[in-house]
Image (cartoon, rainbow over all chains, first blue to last red; front, side, top):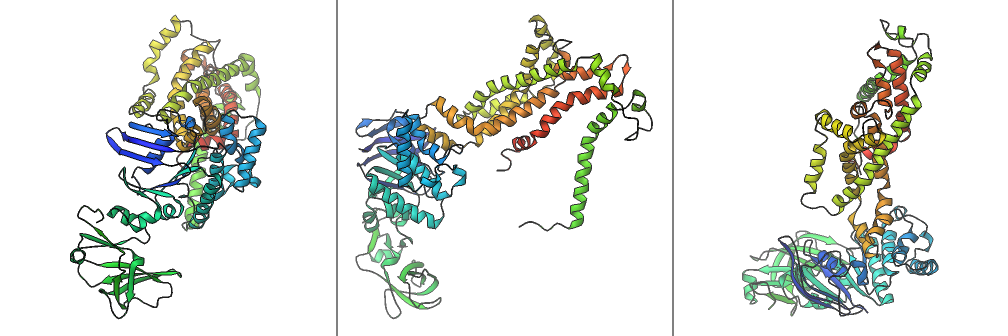
Length: 334
Length: 276
Protein backbone atom coordinates (compact mmCIF):
# COMPACT_ATOMS: atom_id res chain seq x y z
CA UNK A 1 0.00 0.00 0.00
CA UNK A 2 1.13 3.51 -0.67
CA UNK A 3 -1.68 5.98 -0.47
CA UNK A 4 -0.55 9.52 0.23
CA UNK A 5 -2.74 12.42 1.17
CA UNK A 6 -1.70 16.04 1.64
CA UNK A 7 -4.15 17.93 3.78
CA UNK A 8 -3.85 21.73 3.74
CA UNK A 9 -0.08 21.50 3.63
CA UNK A 10 1.59 24.87 4.09
CA UNK A 11 5.30 25.63 4.12
CA UNK A 12 7.18 28.83 4.64
CA UNK A 13 10.84 29.54 5.34
CA UNK A 14 10.81 32.50 7.70
CA UNK A 15 8.64 35.07 6.00
CA UNK A 16 8.97 33.48 2.56
CA UNK A 17 5.94 31.40 1.69
CA UNK A 18 6.94 28.52 -0.55
CA UNK A 19 3.71 26.56 -0.51
CA UNK A 20 0.63 28.60 0.44
CA UNK A 21 -1.70 25.60 0.79
CA UNK A 22 -1.94 22.32 -1.01
CA UNK A 23 -4.44 19.49 -0.91
CA UNK A 24 -3.62 16.42 -2.94
CA UNK A 25 -4.55 12.75 -3.06
CA UNK A 26 -2.20 10.18 -4.47
CA UNK A 27 -3.68 6.73 -4.97
CA UNK A 28 -1.87 3.48 -4.27
CA UNK A 29 0.33 2.31 -7.15
CA UNK A 30 -0.03 5.60 -8.98
CA UNK A 31 2.86 7.23 -10.88
CA UNK A 32 2.49 10.91 -10.08
CA UNK A 33 4.72 13.56 -11.57
CA UNK A 34 5.14 17.01 -10.01
CA UNK A 35 6.11 19.34 -12.80
CA UNK A 36 6.72 23.07 -12.93
CA UNK A 37 9.36 25.68 -13.56
CA UNK A 38 12.30 25.98 -11.16
CA UNK A 39 11.34 27.58 -7.88
CA UNK A 40 7.71 26.46 -8.11
CA UNK A 41 7.95 24.46 -4.89
CA UNK A 42 7.86 20.97 -6.39
CA UNK A 43 11.06 19.80 -4.72
CA UNK A 44 10.01 21.34 -1.41
CA UNK A 45 6.72 19.48 -1.64
CA UNK A 46 8.57 16.21 -2.22
CA UNK A 47 10.89 16.92 0.72
CA UNK A 48 7.87 17.60 2.91
CA UNK A 49 6.43 14.23 1.98
CA UNK A 50 9.83 12.61 2.62
CA UNK A 51 10.10 14.30 6.01
CA UNK A 52 13.34 16.07 5.16
CA UNK A 53 11.53 19.36 5.74
CA UNK A 54 8.91 20.01 8.38
CA UNK A 55 5.53 21.35 7.34
CA UNK A 56 4.63 24.75 8.75
CA UNK A 57 1.04 23.58 9.03
CA UNK A 58 -1.18 20.91 7.53
CA UNK A 59 -0.99 17.14 7.57
CA UNK A 60 0.70 14.43 5.56
CA UNK A 61 -1.07 11.09 5.71
CA UNK A 62 0.41 7.88 4.40
CA UNK A 63 -2.03 4.96 4.20
CA UNK A 64 -4.36 6.97 6.38
CA UNK A 65 -1.79 7.41 9.14
CA UNK A 66 -0.67 10.89 10.14
CA UNK A 67 3.06 11.01 9.39
CA UNK A 68 3.55 14.77 9.66
CA UNK A 69 5.82 14.58 12.69
CA UNK A 70 7.43 11.23 11.85
CA UNK A 71 11.18 11.00 11.06
CA UNK A 72 12.04 10.40 7.38
CA UNK A 73 13.11 6.79 7.89
CA UNK A 74 9.92 5.97 9.79
CA UNK A 75 7.62 6.93 6.93
CA UNK A 76 8.33 3.86 4.83
CA UNK A 77 9.39 5.90 1.83
CA UNK A 78 12.52 5.75 -0.32
CA UNK A 79 14.06 8.64 -2.14
CA UNK A 80 16.29 8.96 -5.19
CA UNK A 81 18.17 12.24 -5.31
CA UNK A 82 19.15 14.37 -8.27
CA UNK A 83 22.82 14.11 -7.29
CA UNK A 84 22.36 10.34 -6.66
CA UNK A 85 23.74 10.98 -3.15
CA UNK A 86 25.64 7.69 -3.10
CA UNK A 87 28.03 7.00 -0.25
CA UNK A 88 31.38 7.51 -2.03
CA UNK A 89 33.39 5.45 0.45
CA UNK A 90 31.23 2.34 0.11
CA UNK A 91 31.06 -0.19 -2.71
CA UNK A 92 27.93 -0.56 -4.80
CA UNK A 93 27.03 -3.50 -2.57
CA UNK A 94 27.59 -1.37 0.53
CA UNK A 95 25.43 1.40 -0.85
CA UNK A 96 22.51 -0.83 -1.70
CA UNK A 97 22.87 -2.75 1.57
CA UNK A 98 23.06 0.38 3.74
CA UNK A 99 19.33 0.83 4.47
CA UNK A 100 19.02 -2.87 5.30
CA UNK A 101 22.04 -2.70 7.58
CA UNK A 102 20.47 0.29 9.33
CA UNK A 103 17.30 -1.73 9.74
CA UNK A 104 19.34 -4.38 11.54
CA UNK A 105 18.64 -7.15 9.05
CA UNK A 106 20.88 -10.22 9.23
CA UNK A 107 23.72 -10.65 6.77
CA UNK A 108 22.41 -13.47 4.61
CA UNK A 109 19.06 -11.74 4.13
CA UNK A 110 20.84 -8.52 3.16
CA UNK A 111 23.01 -10.41 0.68
CA UNK A 112 19.95 -11.97 -0.93
CA UNK A 113 18.02 -8.72 -1.23
CA UNK A 114 20.98 -6.80 -2.61
CA UNK A 115 21.65 -9.51 -5.21
CA UNK A 116 17.99 -9.42 -6.23
CA UNK A 117 18.01 -5.66 -6.64
CA UNK A 118 21.30 -5.79 -8.53
CA UNK A 119 19.86 -8.36 -10.90
CA UNK A 120 16.79 -6.24 -11.63
CA UNK A 121 18.98 -3.23 -12.32
CA UNK A 122 21.79 -5.00 -14.23
CA UNK A 123 24.34 -4.12 -11.57
CA UNK A 124 25.52 -7.62 -10.67
CA UNK A 125 28.92 -7.13 -12.30
CA UNK A 126 29.55 -3.86 -10.51
CA UNK A 127 28.79 -4.77 -6.91
CA UNK A 128 32.40 -4.48 -5.77
CA UNK A 129 33.05 -1.11 -7.44
CA UNK A 130 32.94 2.30 -5.84
CA UNK A 131 30.45 4.90 -7.09
CA UNK A 132 33.36 6.95 -8.47
CA UNK A 133 34.15 4.15 -10.91
CA UNK A 134 30.67 4.09 -12.41
CA UNK A 135 29.04 6.06 -15.22
CA UNK A 136 26.19 8.47 -14.54
CA UNK A 137 23.54 5.96 -15.61
CA UNK A 138 25.01 3.21 -13.44
CA UNK A 139 25.18 5.54 -10.44
CA UNK A 140 21.55 6.39 -10.93
CA UNK A 141 20.73 2.69 -11.01
CA UNK A 142 22.62 2.18 -7.75
CA UNK A 143 20.57 4.97 -6.20
CA UNK A 144 17.41 3.26 -7.40
CA UNK A 145 18.72 -0.05 -6.07
CA UNK A 146 19.24 1.49 -2.66
CA UNK A 147 15.66 2.72 -2.82
CA UNK A 148 14.04 -0.56 -3.87
CA UNK A 149 15.70 -2.92 -1.37
CA UNK A 150 13.73 -1.36 1.45
CA UNK A 151 10.48 -2.35 -0.27
CA UNK A 152 8.99 1.03 0.55
CA UNK A 153 5.36 2.08 0.39
CA UNK A 154 6.30 4.73 -2.13
CA UNK A 155 9.30 5.98 -4.10
CA UNK A 156 10.19 9.63 -4.26
CA UNK A 157 12.29 10.79 -7.19
CA UNK A 158 13.80 14.27 -7.11
CA UNK A 159 14.76 15.16 -10.69
CA UNK A 160 16.70 11.91 -10.99
CA UNK A 161 17.60 12.21 -14.64
CA UNK A 162 18.66 15.82 -14.96
CA UNK A 163 22.36 15.05 -14.57
CA UNK A 164 22.34 12.55 -17.42
CA UNK A 165 22.90 13.18 -21.12
CA UNK A 166 19.93 13.18 -23.48
CA UNK A 167 20.31 9.63 -24.80
CA UNK A 168 20.75 8.12 -21.35
CA UNK A 169 17.84 10.14 -20.03
CA UNK A 170 15.63 8.55 -22.66
CA UNK A 171 16.61 5.00 -21.73
CA UNK A 172 16.48 5.62 -17.96
CA UNK A 173 13.00 7.02 -18.43
CA UNK A 174 11.94 3.71 -19.87
CA UNK A 175 13.70 1.78 -17.12
CA UNK A 176 11.93 3.71 -14.39
CA UNK A 177 8.56 3.26 -16.10
CA UNK A 178 9.22 -0.44 -16.44
CA UNK A 179 10.26 -0.63 -12.79
CA UNK A 180 6.95 0.93 -11.86
CA UNK A 181 5.09 -1.79 -13.71
CA UNK A 182 7.24 -4.48 -12.16
CA UNK A 183 7.08 -3.26 -8.57
CA UNK A 184 3.53 -1.94 -8.59
CA UNK A 185 4.38 0.72 -6.03
CA UNK A 186 3.38 4.35 -5.71
CA UNK A 187 5.94 6.68 -7.26
CA UNK A 188 6.20 10.43 -6.94
CA UNK A 189 8.52 11.97 -9.46
CA UNK A 190 9.63 15.59 -9.56
CA UNK A 191 10.87 17.12 -12.78
CA UNK A 192 10.96 20.39 -14.67
CA UNK A 193 11.00 18.50 -17.95
CA UNK A 194 7.50 18.24 -19.35
CA UNK A 195 8.56 15.45 -21.71
CA UNK A 196 9.43 13.27 -18.70
CA UNK A 197 6.12 14.23 -17.13
CA UNK A 198 4.10 13.40 -20.22
CA UNK A 199 5.81 10.10 -20.97
CA UNK A 200 5.93 8.61 -17.48
CA UNK A 201 3.00 9.85 -15.47
CA UNK A 202 -0.35 8.34 -14.70
CA UNK A 203 -1.17 11.69 -13.19
CA UNK A 204 0.58 15.03 -13.60
CA UNK A 205 0.46 17.76 -10.98
CA UNK A 206 1.40 21.09 -12.54
CA UNK A 207 2.79 23.47 -9.92
CA UNK A 208 3.43 27.17 -10.19
CA UNK A 209 4.57 29.41 -7.33
CA UNK A 210 3.53 26.81 -4.76
CA UNK A 211 0.02 26.42 -6.18
CA UNK A 212 -1.41 23.45 -8.00
CA UNK A 213 -2.44 24.75 -11.41
CA UNK A 214 -3.97 21.52 -12.65
CA UNK A 215 -4.04 17.82 -11.87
CA UNK A 216 -4.82 15.27 -14.53
CA UNK A 217 -3.62 12.58 -16.86
CA UNK A 218 -1.03 13.66 -19.43
CA UNK A 219 -3.58 13.69 -22.25
CA UNK A 220 -6.16 15.58 -20.20
CA UNK A 221 -3.60 18.28 -19.60
CA UNK A 222 -2.62 18.30 -23.24
CA UNK A 223 -6.17 18.36 -24.57
CA UNK A 224 -7.81 20.68 -22.12
CA UNK A 225 -5.44 22.84 -20.08
CA UNK A 226 -7.44 24.80 -17.53
CA UNK A 227 -5.34 27.91 -17.84
CA UNK A 228 -2.66 29.68 -19.82
CA UNK A 229 0.14 28.47 -17.54
CA UNK A 230 -0.63 24.80 -18.10
CA UNK A 231 -1.27 25.43 -21.80
CA UNK A 232 2.14 26.99 -22.18
CA UNK A 233 3.95 24.48 -19.99
CA UNK A 234 2.64 21.20 -21.39
CA UNK A 235 3.49 20.37 -24.99
CA UNK A 236 6.65 20.74 -26.99
CA UNK A 237 7.22 22.95 -28.87
CA UNK A 238 5.14 25.37 -26.84
CA UNK A 239 1.60 26.27 -27.74
CA UNK A 240 1.30 29.40 -29.91
CA UNK A 241 -0.52 32.12 -28.00
CA UNK A 242 -2.28 34.88 -29.89
CA UNK A 243 -3.76 38.00 -28.35
CA UNK A 244 -5.39 41.14 -29.72
CA UNK A 245 -7.84 41.54 -32.59
CA UNK A 246 -7.42 38.04 -34.00
CA UNK A 247 -8.19 36.51 -30.60
CA UNK A 248 -11.21 38.76 -30.13
CA UNK A 249 -12.59 37.58 -33.47
CA UNK A 250 -12.70 34.11 -31.89
CA UNK A 251 -14.33 35.51 -28.75
CA UNK A 252 -11.39 35.29 -26.34
CA UNK A 253 -8.66 37.47 -24.87
CA UNK A 254 -6.00 34.90 -25.67
CA UNK A 255 -6.16 32.09 -28.14
CA UNK A 256 -3.82 29.13 -28.07
CA UNK A 257 -3.03 26.72 -30.90
CA UNK A 258 -0.49 23.94 -30.64
CA UNK A 259 2.11 23.76 -33.43
CA UNK A 260 0.73 20.38 -34.51
CA UNK A 261 -2.75 21.86 -34.89
CA UNK A 262 -1.79 24.41 -37.52
CA UNK A 263 -2.19 23.47 -41.17
CA UNK A 264 0.07 24.80 -43.87
CA UNK A 265 -0.86 25.62 -47.41
CA UNK A 266 0.90 27.43 -50.19
CA UNK A 267 -2.34 28.56 -51.81
CA UNK A 268 -5.00 29.42 -49.26
CA UNK A 269 -5.68 29.77 -45.55
CA UNK A 270 -6.56 32.05 -42.65
CA UNK A 271 -3.27 33.79 -41.93
CA UNK A 272 -0.65 34.64 -44.55
CA UNK A 273 3.04 34.71 -43.67
CA UNK A 274 6.61 33.93 -44.61
CA UNK A 275 8.70 30.99 -43.48
CA UNK A 276 11.50 32.11 -41.18
CA UNK A 277 13.70 29.41 -39.72
CA UNK A 278 12.90 25.81 -40.58
CA UNK A 279 14.16 23.19 -38.13
CA UNK A 280 14.39 19.80 -39.82
CA UNK A 281 14.34 16.95 -37.35
CA UNK A 282 13.81 14.25 -39.96
CA UNK A 283 10.55 12.96 -38.51
CA UNK A 284 9.15 16.46 -38.18
CA UNK A 285 9.91 19.93 -39.34
CA UNK A 286 9.33 22.91 -37.08
CA UNK A 287 8.64 25.97 -39.19
CA UNK A 288 8.76 29.40 -37.62
CA UNK A 289 6.34 31.41 -39.72
CA UNK A 290 6.24 35.21 -39.54
CA UNK A 291 2.58 36.04 -39.97
CA UNK A 292 1.70 39.33 -41.64
CA UNK A 293 -1.49 39.85 -39.57
CA UNK A 294 -1.09 42.39 -36.76
CA UNK A 295 -0.87 40.97 -33.21
CA UNK A 296 0.07 37.44 -34.25
CA UNK A 297 3.77 37.70 -34.90
CA UNK A 298 5.67 34.45 -35.19
CA UNK A 299 3.92 31.07 -35.10
CA UNK A 300 5.56 27.70 -34.72
CA UNK A 301 4.12 25.08 -37.02
CA UNK A 302 4.82 21.40 -36.80
CA UNK A 303 4.90 19.97 -40.30
CA UNK A 304 5.79 16.73 -41.96
CA UNK A 305 9.45 15.78 -41.91
CA UNK A 306 9.71 15.87 -45.67
CA UNK A 307 7.98 19.23 -46.14
CA UNK A 308 9.65 21.10 -48.96
CA UNK A 309 9.42 24.64 -47.62
CA UNK A 310 12.36 26.92 -47.24
CA UNK A 311 13.31 30.19 -45.66
CA UNK A 312 11.41 33.07 -47.27
CA UNK A 313 8.62 30.99 -48.86
CA UNK A 314 5.11 32.44 -48.63
CA UNK A 315 2.61 30.23 -46.80
CA UNK A 316 -0.88 30.27 -45.34
CA UNK A 317 -1.46 28.99 -41.80
CA UNK A 318 -4.85 27.75 -40.58
CA UNK A 319 -5.75 26.32 -37.16
CA UNK A 320 -7.47 22.94 -37.13
CA UNK A 321 -11.15 23.11 -36.18
CA UNK A 322 -11.91 22.25 -32.59
CA UNK A 323 -8.26 22.45 -31.58
CA UNK A 324 -8.23 26.10 -30.65
CA UNK A 325 -7.91 26.87 -26.92
CA UNK A 326 -9.58 30.05 -25.68
CA UNK A 327 -8.68 31.95 -22.53
CA UNK A 328 -10.24 34.90 -20.70
CA UNK A 329 -8.64 37.98 -19.21
CA UNK A 330 -7.50 36.04 -16.11
CA UNK A 331 -5.91 33.38 -18.27
CA UNK A 332 -8.51 30.72 -17.43
CA UNK A 333 -9.83 28.43 -20.15
CA UNK A 334 -13.25 29.31 -21.55
CA UNK B 1 42.98 25.52 -24.57
CA UNK B 2 46.32 26.14 -22.94
CA UNK B 3 47.84 29.48 -23.67
CA UNK B 4 51.03 29.49 -25.68
CA UNK B 5 53.79 30.78 -23.40
CA UNK B 6 57.09 31.81 -25.02
CA UNK B 7 60.07 29.71 -23.93
CA UNK B 8 61.88 32.76 -22.63
CA UNK B 9 58.99 33.63 -20.30
CA UNK B 10 58.87 30.04 -19.11
CA UNK B 11 62.59 30.06 -18.45
CA UNK B 12 62.30 33.38 -16.59
CA UNK B 13 59.55 32.10 -14.33
CA UNK B 14 61.36 28.84 -13.72
CA UNK B 15 64.49 30.67 -12.60
CA UNK B 16 62.41 33.02 -10.46
CA UNK B 17 60.61 30.04 -8.90
CA UNK B 18 63.85 28.30 -8.00
CA UNK B 19 65.28 31.54 -6.68
CA UNK B 20 62.34 32.14 -4.37
CA UNK B 21 62.40 28.50 -3.29
CA UNK B 22 66.10 28.70 -2.52
CA UNK B 23 65.65 31.96 -0.63
CA UNK B 24 63.00 30.37 1.59
CA UNK B 25 65.06 27.26 2.12
CA UNK B 26 68.36 29.07 2.66
CA UNK B 27 68.07 29.70 6.43
CA UNK B 28 67.43 25.99 7.04
CA UNK B 29 70.31 25.01 4.80
CA UNK B 30 72.59 27.51 6.55
CA UNK B 31 71.56 26.19 9.95
CA UNK B 32 72.32 22.63 8.91
CA UNK B 33 75.70 23.65 7.44
CA UNK B 34 76.64 25.69 10.50
CA UNK B 35 75.84 22.77 12.78
CA UNK B 36 78.74 20.89 11.20
CA UNK B 37 81.25 23.70 11.71
CA UNK B 38 83.46 24.44 14.68
CA UNK B 39 82.47 27.52 16.72
CA UNK B 40 85.40 29.28 15.06
CA UNK B 41 84.42 28.63 11.48
CA UNK B 42 80.80 29.36 12.29
CA UNK B 43 81.53 33.04 12.87
CA UNK B 44 84.32 33.37 10.30
CA UNK B 45 84.20 36.32 7.90
CA UNK B 46 83.75 35.87 5.03
CA UNK B 47 81.34 33.00 5.82
CA UNK B 48 82.45 29.61 4.58
CA UNK B 49 79.88 27.83 2.51
CA UNK B 50 80.90 24.26 1.80
CA UNK B 51 84.64 24.04 2.06
CA UNK B 52 85.37 23.84 5.75
CA UNK B 53 86.43 21.04 8.06
CA UNK B 54 83.17 19.13 8.71
CA UNK B 55 82.70 18.00 12.29
CA UNK B 56 80.00 16.28 14.33
CA UNK B 57 81.32 17.51 17.64
CA UNK B 58 78.44 19.97 18.13
CA UNK B 59 75.93 17.16 18.07
CA UNK B 60 77.90 15.15 20.55
CA UNK B 61 78.28 18.10 22.87
CA UNK B 62 74.63 19.14 22.59
CA UNK B 63 73.53 15.63 23.52
CA UNK B 64 75.93 15.53 26.37
CA UNK B 65 74.85 18.88 27.75
CA UNK B 66 71.09 18.48 27.55
CA UNK B 67 68.79 15.53 27.14
CA UNK B 68 67.49 15.73 23.55
CA UNK B 69 65.13 12.80 23.90
CA UNK B 70 63.40 14.21 26.95
CA UNK B 71 62.66 17.42 25.04
CA UNK B 72 61.68 15.45 22.00
CA UNK B 73 59.24 13.38 24.03
CA UNK B 74 57.75 16.54 25.53
CA UNK B 75 57.31 18.03 22.07
CA UNK B 76 55.57 14.92 20.80
CA UNK B 77 53.25 14.69 23.78
CA UNK B 78 52.36 18.36 23.74
CA UNK B 79 51.82 18.74 19.99
CA UNK B 80 49.99 15.46 19.44
CA UNK B 81 48.07 15.81 22.68
CA UNK B 82 46.91 19.35 22.00
CA UNK B 83 45.89 18.45 18.45
CA UNK B 84 43.87 15.42 19.52
CA UNK B 85 42.20 17.33 22.32
CA UNK B 86 41.48 20.14 19.85
CA UNK B 87 39.92 17.72 17.36
CA UNK B 88 37.76 16.25 20.07
CA UNK B 89 36.30 19.67 20.78
CA UNK B 90 36.35 20.99 17.22
CA UNK B 91 34.70 18.09 15.38
CA UNK B 92 31.30 18.47 17.07
CA UNK B 93 31.60 22.27 16.90
CA UNK B 94 32.42 22.34 13.20
CA UNK B 95 29.79 19.70 12.58
CA UNK B 96 27.06 21.76 14.16
CA UNK B 97 28.08 24.90 12.30
CA UNK B 98 28.43 23.20 8.93
CA UNK B 99 25.25 21.15 8.96
CA UNK B 100 22.80 23.14 10.99
CA UNK B 101 23.96 26.71 10.76
CA UNK B 102 22.02 29.50 12.40
CA UNK B 103 22.00 33.20 11.66
CA UNK B 104 24.90 33.65 14.07
CA UNK B 105 27.19 30.91 12.76
CA UNK B 106 29.28 33.26 10.66
CA UNK B 107 29.66 35.62 13.61
CA UNK B 108 30.77 32.80 15.88
CA UNK B 109 33.36 31.72 13.34
CA UNK B 110 34.72 35.23 12.96
CA UNK B 111 34.77 35.75 16.69
CA UNK B 112 36.81 32.58 17.09
CA UNK B 113 39.25 33.72 14.46
CA UNK B 114 39.49 37.16 16.01
CA UNK B 115 41.02 35.62 19.12
CA UNK B 116 43.98 34.69 16.92
CA UNK B 117 44.49 38.37 16.13
CA UNK B 118 45.09 39.24 19.74
CA UNK B 119 48.83 39.33 20.46
CA UNK B 120 49.60 36.43 22.75
CA UNK B 121 51.69 38.59 25.02
CA UNK B 122 48.53 40.53 25.88
CA UNK B 123 47.23 37.60 27.91
CA UNK B 124 50.56 36.32 29.13
CA UNK B 125 50.31 37.77 32.61
CA UNK B 126 46.79 36.49 33.42
CA UNK B 127 47.55 33.07 31.98
CA UNK B 128 50.86 32.90 33.79
CA UNK B 129 49.14 33.73 37.07
CA UNK B 130 46.38 31.22 36.43
CA UNK B 131 48.96 28.56 35.69
CA UNK B 132 51.03 29.44 38.75
CA UNK B 133 48.02 29.32 41.07
CA UNK B 134 46.69 26.05 39.68
CA UNK B 135 50.09 24.40 39.64
CA UNK B 136 50.16 24.03 35.87
CA UNK B 137 53.45 25.83 35.31
CA UNK B 138 56.05 23.63 33.69
CA UNK B 139 53.62 20.73 33.23
CA UNK B 140 52.88 18.95 29.98
CA UNK B 141 49.17 19.06 30.80
CA UNK B 142 49.26 22.83 31.14
CA UNK B 143 51.03 23.30 27.83
CA UNK B 144 48.74 20.86 26.08
CA UNK B 145 45.74 22.83 27.29
CA UNK B 146 47.16 26.19 26.31
CA UNK B 147 48.18 25.00 22.84
CA UNK B 148 44.76 23.43 22.33
CA UNK B 149 43.24 26.81 23.09
CA UNK B 150 45.54 28.72 20.76
CA UNK B 151 45.04 26.36 17.84
CA UNK B 152 41.37 25.59 18.37
CA UNK B 153 40.10 28.41 16.11
CA UNK B 154 42.22 27.11 13.25
CA UNK B 155 41.10 23.54 13.80
CA UNK B 156 37.45 24.56 13.87
CA UNK B 157 37.85 26.68 10.75
CA UNK B 158 39.61 23.98 8.80
CA UNK B 159 37.14 21.28 9.76
CA UNK B 160 34.23 23.59 9.07
CA UNK B 161 35.54 24.14 5.54
CA UNK B 162 35.91 20.40 4.96
CA UNK B 163 32.53 19.52 6.35
CA UNK B 164 30.91 22.15 4.18
CA UNK B 165 32.22 20.28 1.16
CA UNK B 166 30.30 17.16 2.09
CA UNK B 167 27.06 17.27 0.11
CA UNK B 168 24.00 17.60 2.31
CA UNK B 169 22.15 15.23 -0.03
CA UNK B 170 24.28 12.34 1.15
CA UNK B 171 23.42 13.00 4.77
CA UNK B 172 19.78 13.26 3.86
CA UNK B 173 20.02 10.00 1.96
CA UNK B 174 21.42 8.40 5.11
CA UNK B 175 18.53 9.81 7.08
CA UNK B 176 16.06 8.41 4.55
CA UNK B 177 17.86 5.08 4.76
CA UNK B 178 17.11 4.93 8.45
CA UNK B 179 20.40 6.02 9.98
CA UNK B 180 20.15 7.63 13.42
CA UNK B 181 22.27 10.72 14.07
CA UNK B 182 24.99 8.62 15.69
CA UNK B 183 25.03 6.11 12.82
CA UNK B 184 24.99 8.92 10.29
CA UNK B 185 28.12 10.34 11.93
CA UNK B 186 29.91 7.03 12.26
CA UNK B 187 29.05 5.39 8.95
CA UNK B 188 28.67 8.31 6.57
CA UNK B 189 30.13 11.58 7.79
CA UNK B 190 33.36 10.52 9.43
CA UNK B 191 34.60 8.26 6.62
CA UNK B 192 33.90 11.03 4.13
CA UNK B 193 35.69 13.64 6.24
CA UNK B 194 38.79 11.53 6.92
CA UNK B 195 41.06 13.34 4.42
CA UNK B 196 40.06 16.67 5.92
CA UNK B 197 40.50 15.50 9.49
CA UNK B 198 43.91 14.04 8.60
CA UNK B 199 45.26 17.24 7.08
CA UNK B 200 43.92 19.28 9.99
CA UNK B 201 45.69 16.91 12.33
CA UNK B 202 48.98 17.21 10.47
CA UNK B 203 48.92 20.96 10.15
CA UNK B 204 48.11 21.44 13.80
CA UNK B 205 50.81 19.08 14.96
CA UNK B 206 53.26 21.20 12.98
CA UNK B 207 51.86 24.44 14.40
CA UNK B 208 52.02 23.11 17.94
CA UNK B 209 55.50 21.69 17.42
CA UNK B 210 56.79 25.06 16.31
CA UNK B 211 54.95 27.11 18.89
CA UNK B 212 57.54 29.02 20.91
CA UNK B 213 55.86 31.81 22.82
CA UNK B 214 53.85 29.77 25.30
CA UNK B 215 56.24 26.85 25.44
CA UNK B 216 59.10 29.16 26.39
CA UNK B 217 57.15 31.24 28.87
CA UNK B 218 55.32 28.52 30.72
CA UNK B 219 58.02 25.89 31.06
CA UNK B 220 61.36 25.67 32.80
CA UNK B 221 62.78 22.19 32.81
CA UNK B 222 60.34 19.34 33.31
CA UNK B 223 57.90 20.01 30.50
CA UNK B 224 60.23 21.93 28.20
CA UNK B 225 59.81 20.87 24.57
CA UNK B 226 62.34 21.27 21.74
CA UNK B 227 61.73 25.00 21.38
CA UNK B 228 63.13 25.44 24.89
CA UNK B 229 65.95 23.08 23.97
CA UNK B 230 66.97 25.43 21.13
CA UNK B 231 66.51 28.54 23.21
CA UNK B 232 68.80 27.23 25.91
CA UNK B 233 71.69 27.62 23.49
CA UNK B 234 71.20 31.35 23.04
CA UNK B 235 72.41 31.80 26.58
CA UNK B 236 73.70 34.71 28.62
CA UNK B 237 77.21 33.31 28.41
CA UNK B 238 77.28 34.27 24.72
CA UNK B 239 76.12 32.87 21.46
CA UNK B 240 77.39 29.53 20.37
CA UNK B 241 76.29 29.54 16.74
CA UNK B 242 77.42 26.06 15.88
CA UNK B 243 75.84 24.41 18.93
CA UNK B 244 72.68 26.47 18.51
CA UNK B 245 72.51 25.28 14.92
CA UNK B 246 73.02 21.69 15.92
CA UNK B 247 70.21 21.98 18.47
CA UNK B 248 67.95 23.65 15.91
CA UNK B 249 68.64 21.00 13.33
CA UNK B 250 67.81 18.30 15.84
CA UNK B 251 64.61 20.09 16.80
CA UNK B 252 63.27 20.69 13.31
CA UNK B 253 64.36 17.38 11.80
CA UNK B 254 61.39 15.30 13.03
CA UNK B 255 58.78 17.78 11.86
CA UNK B 256 60.61 18.29 8.57
CA UNK B 257 60.52 14.55 7.95
CA UNK B 258 56.84 14.37 8.92
CA UNK B 259 56.10 17.30 6.63
CA UNK B 260 58.02 15.74 3.78
CA UNK B 261 56.12 12.46 3.93
CA UNK B 262 52.74 14.13 4.30
CA UNK B 263 53.21 16.98 1.86
CA UNK B 264 50.58 15.68 -0.54
CA UNK B 265 48.02 15.52 2.22
CA UNK B 266 49.05 18.97 3.48
CA UNK B 267 48.84 20.69 0.11
CA UNK B 268 45.48 19.08 -0.49
CA UNK B 269 44.38 20.25 2.92
CA UNK B 270 45.50 23.80 2.45
CA UNK B 271 44.00 24.23 -1.01
CA UNK B 272 40.84 22.31 -0.19
CA UNK B 273 37.79 24.03 -1.58
CA UNK B 274 39.90 26.34 -3.72
CA UNK B 275 40.17 23.83 -6.51
CA UNK B 276 37.62 21.11 -6.86
